[in-house]
Structure formats: C-alpha cells, structure tokens
Length: 278
Image (cartoon, rainbow, N blue to C red; front, side):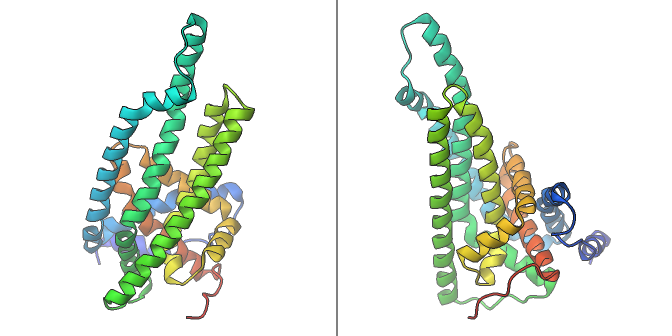
C-alpha cells in the first residue's frame, strides 16, 4: 500500500458517525464524500479500469443530449409560445426564451442522470463491489451469468422506478410553476428541480451498496429520508461536478465509490437497518 493510500485508509477509519452533528454539518460532510471516492480511486490504481466504460458511456450520452437540445430547443419553445408579431410581446418572448434555457438544462441534466444510471449501472456496481472488497474485506462473488442477469434485471427495475418517481415529481413541479407562477415559473422550477434532482443523485449513488444488501426500494427511500441532509449534500456535490465541462463526464464512477464508502460508514455505526432475509 502506498503512503497516500495508507493515509487515506487511516482517515476513513476515523470518519465520524454520518448521523452526528447538526443539519449543516451533515450536509457539509455529504459534499465531501464524492471527492473521497475520487481520492480512493487515485489511491488504488487497480480500480481505474472499471471507470473507463462508464466514462465513455457518459461522453456518448452527453453528446447526444446536447445535439438534441441544440436542434430542437426552438421548436420546444414554439410549442409553449410562438414568437409574437408585437414588438412589446416579442421582448417578453425573448426574456422567456432565455429563462427557459435554465429549465432546458434541468431537463437535459435529468435525462443524463437517468440514461447514465441505466446504461452505466452494471459497471458502476462492479466498481462499487471492488471498493467494498478493498475497504471492508467483502470478497466479490465469483462471476455467474445467472446472478449477473438477475442483478441486471433488479437494477433496471429500480432505475425505471426512479425514472417514474423523478419524472412524476418534476412534471408536477413544472406544471405548478408554469401555471401558478407565470413569468417566474422557469426560475423557480430551475431551483426546485435542481434540488429534487440532487436528492435523487444522492439516492442513485447509494443504490449500488444498498442493492447488494437486498434492500427494497421502500427501505432505501426510508433510510435516505432519515439522512436527508447527508443525501442532499452528496447529491449537490455530484450535481455541481456534472455541470463542469469534461469533469462531469469523468465524475460519476468516483461518485459511485463515494456512495459506497458512505454506506460502509452507515453500516459501521449501525445506521443501516438489517437486510431482509435471502
């Protein structure tokens, strides 16, 4: 083990109880866990090969979404409000056009989150599994095609359910903002939609370790709600990094490692409920 890895492992061993401290303290510590994931991969070069495919998938997804938004954004705006002939109304239309860019970015961000969650999940899960092997001594099970297909079906089912939950929440929120708050609706939606997306990002990167413990969706949701500040901090950190050009494509595997480390901390301090029987 390198000196850097030894120092990191000693630091992780001294990590406080994730539930300790006030709301702001827990939120602040949650912000740091994704970067702890990056440091862990840096300390263990053998994990880097598991990051390559998710990063390439992220590049393909972002490129596709960017091209689609660039091409269809004017048509989407026209569906909401066609460019008026009046000069004064046209000024308002241009203001709405600019403000709706924020809403379009939130939608594009959500699409990226959903697609990378579906496509990269098997590879991030493998990365998470090997992180547990190094940090907690949990030996990965030998490869089995039957187990792989079963786990893949469970992952896709959970990701699809998250898609429905997040899509439903954002759709209701968008309708509320556009109908009840005309003019300011796009700004309010960008802020609230970003907060909702951050929480679901926190959910997403906890999911690999929790799924290996056979937690059902309801149990996962209950656990994350009991740790809302930590989950929001974690998800906000990931959300900000995903918006940084280039780094956003590289960061999700590190977030998967960070989420695994956080779940191991929950487990170490007895903050996880017992898994259901096999």
